[in-house]
Length: 304
Image 1 (spheres, rainbow, N blue to C red):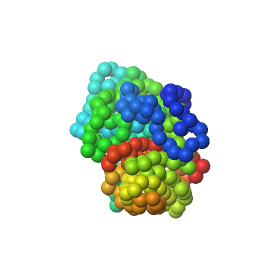
Image 2: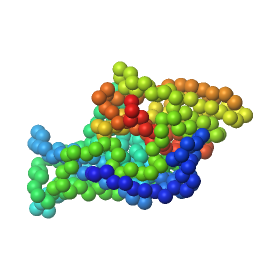
Image 3: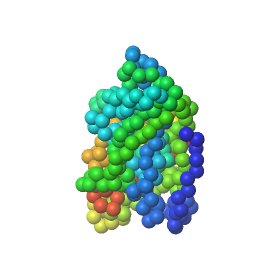
């Protein structure tokens, strides 16, 4: 997957590209990332026999044109078709974003599974028993995805089913993560001020490496006459190893401090990331417009 530049026309681009006080998505960009017209794509990065099975390592790429979460359909096996045209069901498959929304144009090869108490890194792959990757072999994976903002009350808005078709003759072992296609205006600087629900302004004020990963310091400033909450969950990150780090929980259930009227509030979040992973971006969900509606932002912390 070579990096390609995909340009999205942006009205009032000064809000995103020039120096400004606050980040508010222009309507055309907001619409473009609300319900993309594309789909997810995938490539095989490695194929190897393993204990009588054929393991196929996979990288998935968000080509929907919108922020999107995807996962395989429950109880639906992948289908391996050999060069002779014979098809075999493959019941072992781990393909998806781990519950998170991934930015458009980004690609990944793993996520965090397990439990909150015992999270575990899960690489994306399919295992097929009793098959051999002969020339002309292909793999098909049925999946479900949603695009755009996350609405707690209507989580299935902009949901669709589709199929990944992977040509196993075309292995792609070398991939530059996490960006596959650059989208102008998508990525924010760490100092960006984001207007959240009730016009409260959210700012990332600090990023620190810890023994276990990263600690983010957040600040909200409330210009209104009433106290307000701004939920952001525990934001995940993705870097140059292609793994989306952070155990998924719906962002509304993670506690945040109340921001009094006319005042500020501060708090921290943490995410476990190996020290050697660089080139990181935060996949940030911010409660905006109304309660339990979350707008997504990609924040550049590649210098950390």
